[in-house]
Image 1 (cartoon, rainbow, N blue to C red):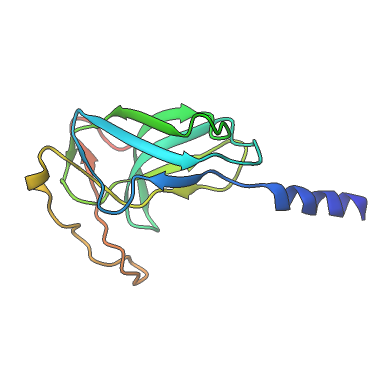
Image 2: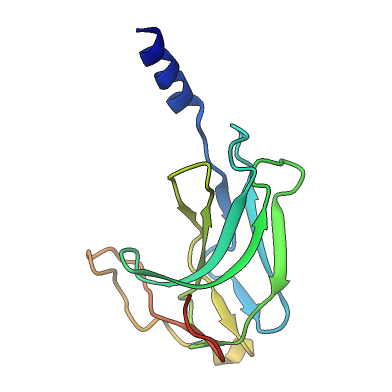
Length: 148
């Protein structure tokens, strides 16, 4: 019984970082700063948090690049910036995935746009997810590299 209660307690206190930004409608310009923000993991478990640039639908996500590794449990460091890559298409089809070797949970930001000029943005190629949810998406690429 003691072991069971301990396991339940650990499960109840486990928390994950919560993505805050980018959010819907956010636009970033290639070669300028792509910024990411989250609320820290209050359990302190996510001391190693990997951040990946992603694309694809909610069921078939594609990792385009690893953009950084940070301490996701440090409440004094809840942002990260890096130079935005050159991508195609310029559409709101990119998002970030947060993962940690300390947790089986994954978290994601909402989709955002990377473009060369704000006037070059095109709509997401797909208006709905494969499961029917009204969440536009598409498959993007980083110019000059292949998906990892």
